[in-house]
Image (cartoon, rainbow, N blue to C red):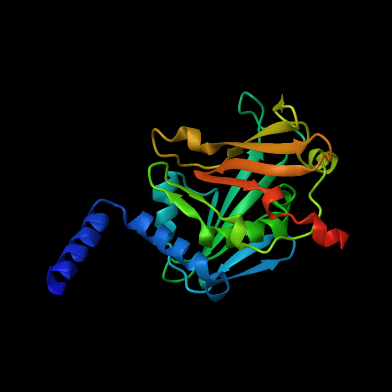
Length: 253
């Protein structure tokens, strides 16, 4: 096959992606590719919240609307672009907000070109996703595998330097989040299930279930440590097995 013909075929494929709305997935894939050179394209800042900064941003605000079919709680115009914030509030089995209120946020900053420059997670979220473990899980994405059928990305912890930090204890997590909606008992662990409802004024018809976010926290029966977190946050599925990133021997040496 002549090189020029190859170029024409590739161009047609890209055009087809654009015409079918797959440009959103294409930009998400380009961001995934950047993860393989994490320090070149990203940096992390941790104050009260956790922020992932994008040095060469790719994704647009419309990508998140198209992929999640949900709009944020707050949309604020800024001189440098715009700021979005998604508020998640703890609810009971009837989707009623519990009292005292328990809530956390995920926030995004976009520049004047509408590209994502920073993605932040609030202090309460860090109670179930400790900063160092959250960062190392993001770094593992660069060596991860993509399941095209399920549209899932699995990180590769083997390529990442492990950390010696302790994990949150069940008592500390429950003190912040309150009692769970449900508890499932297994041989070696307990799974605490919490429900959070996204506060949003606009939900695309047929995607109402995306607003209800179930968070599963697995606690080791022996150590009482939080060993795994899995949740669905506004259409974004996150699952972190903390034990894969923890190296207790480093702490003991």
